[in-house]
Image (cartoon, rainbow, N blue to C red; front, side, top):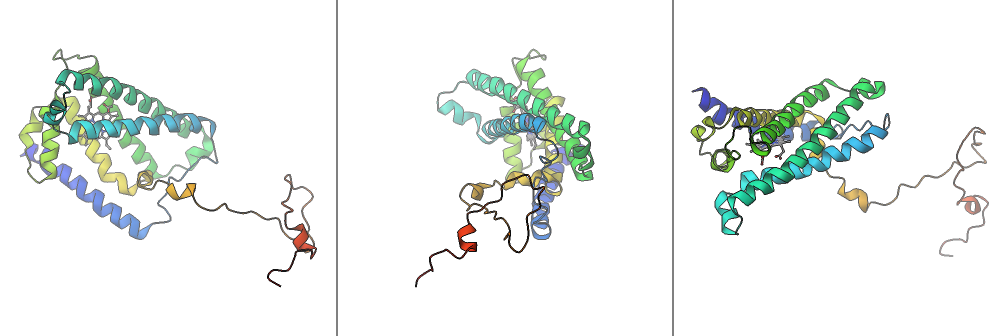
Length: 259
Ligand code: HEM
């Protein structure tokens, strides 16, 4: 019964909350659909930790897709032996995990140490940091202990025989809790943490992951103009040079348009 809940009902509850939550958030809070960037408060630590975390995550996501979505028979069919797959998943996977953990630690340190960043941290941020941290640490722990250092002495756990088919079958409504029941506890904890962060995703700033600023590259420049200095005198304390490209227009020297 408990196994059915953990490996049948819970993941689907999380998926349902995710989709309903995303729909609700999009309908009710589009202005809040943002990273809530705190770059304005602190940028030095952010410049280092943020790319480390995000690029690491890109490779972690690619690794998850590779290991969970593609059946073992597919990689075998294209000539990748199981041993080669294991090395291919474990070595880059561990490097990506290390980058993510270092980046995450940097972001967390910055958030706690910098007063302005700390004060701009909402309750949903705190919940998100805790649950995301659990998912990252548990996944990295499973990879480091069982796959990289093989502390169980089994030559690495073959999750493509259990966790991967369990997930694929779950997603097509063919729930098979027994496939997960025999997995090592490190992976069980990780999968539960993974689905938990998926459930809270829509209610946090993580929604920004679905909004890449692609249009930013092609959008027109935002043009800043100085005020008309004849009607509104510049403050003498202004530290920057006003834009004077419209001086001629102001002095009436522009060629008249069309006539
Ligand atoms: C958003 C949620 C999740 C996050 C942030 C996350 C994060 C991580 C991290 C950082 C690693 C270690 C690096 C790596 O090997 O890629 C990892 C490994 C792993 N995760 Fe997740 N994970 C999540 C969800 C899941 C879910 C839902 C499953 C399965 C249903 C899963 C299965 C695995 C497996 C099997 C590994 C080991 C990969 C290997 O060692 O080759 N993860 N995860």
